[in-house]
Length: 392
Image (cartoon, rainbow, N blue to C red; front, side, top):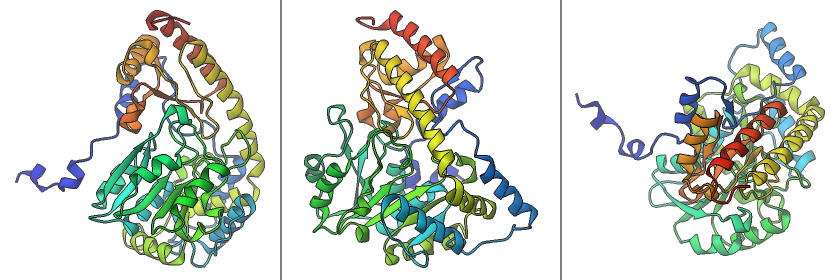
């Protein structure tokens, strides 16, 4: 049997993630400082871990309802209302998923299919485009610009909307750029969409990690709640990446369609993680604030470090990444990352891993200790002195 011929052409058409090869490389190297992994370096706060442990001790090891424990959905509803001013019913407007990634996949599969177009601004999270392709839909890429601080502008959006547009992915705060959309930015986008049959998939997994005022969700704007799928989770804000828990909020019809796919494909999210998440939402605010304060300290050090190395770096106001322009090195993104890794033992990720318009940029995360960040910055500046066209 020719096994290659048995694989779906859609799956074949999608290349592996551009990030993984670098992580494979550092497994074989010593003294590497990784600024590449997009997850908190903090351990899940103890009270949340303890709640998960207690759930095991109490024998909570069975399936939960497909949509998640009602108590958890109620706490998610309370949290979204308290933090972002949006009301969702825990009965039929909230679905608990296996991480935010499953929620993205479910939303796209419930909305899009052959003949449909999904607008995806890039640079952005690596999963959006493949998930759209797997539905049979056509991804339509909007290349964001550094001069716009990587925000989605109404002028750009209008150019790419067609009669076939079914959904718009809105990835803010943004991975990999750290860009945010303020209320005045979102109002302009909402104005364009108000009379169009386009669903917004608003990925707000980094909503708590903002450094210039409070995060605003497009779902909170007039007329936008019913046409938005709000996606969030526990991985980034509560340092719970390994617990694999997220959620989607939206119109009952759309959540019902996502529930149907989730029901057949997944059954339910991890029981222990759901119990821990209830504790996170009830008593986790102070821990989140402490982590955000520390991220903010690291953010300033890293932005300043890249700038002193001669690499222009706009100020990221969300998530935990910087996205410096490394064209001053005279190298493309991939060569820069490989040379920096092998010569200075610092791992950053090529901007092209997040879309072709990421060429000339790299992503570095400050989800690492201050000690490691300071040392990494020293190595980057030494590297820049060697290769930059104008030095620093």
